[in-house]
Image 1 (spheres, rainbow, N blue to C red):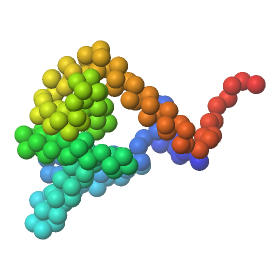
Image 2 (image 1 turned 180 degrees about the vertical axis):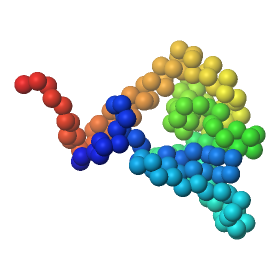
Image 3 (image 1 turned 30 degrees about the horizontal axis):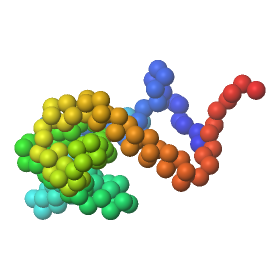
Length: 173
């Protein structure tokens, strides 16, 4: 696959599409310099409502992406509740920080194992905790070690399931 380098500035190739918020709505900027500005105020009320609901649906449902494979219902419920709670409190970005979903799942599993408790009970407690409390838990050496072990197990399982990947690398024959 070849890249168009005619629009390269410095060493970086511009993104194909960048989306930014403006005072009126959104600006869609293509890598070739063309832009389209969307003013939310010019859209019919029904379209604004549909877009709002679509945004909520995507934001909330994305938080449990990847949990269906293991039918992790308790973890999914905690994630859904956490995102809804964060939004209701005016926080668009996850209180748990980072890549929210998997980090929170690992935190829940690590605490459940160390405290010899159920994932369901820990999930409820983690969902209620604020960002600073979660960060403190993640810095605990025992919890951090459990979380690292969970990540390593996922990577090992993924490597067993993955097809032989073709790696393009010049090792200087």
